[in-house]
Image (cartoon, rainbow, N blue to C red; front, top):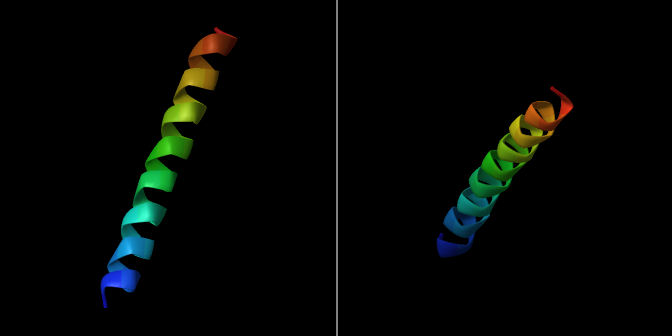
Length: 30
């Protein structure tokens, strides 16, 4: 069970990281 939670948390953090990187990249394009 703990492993599944770990995967979900890692996935959520990864998604947030990607969105943040995309937002920063978009800012740099302006």
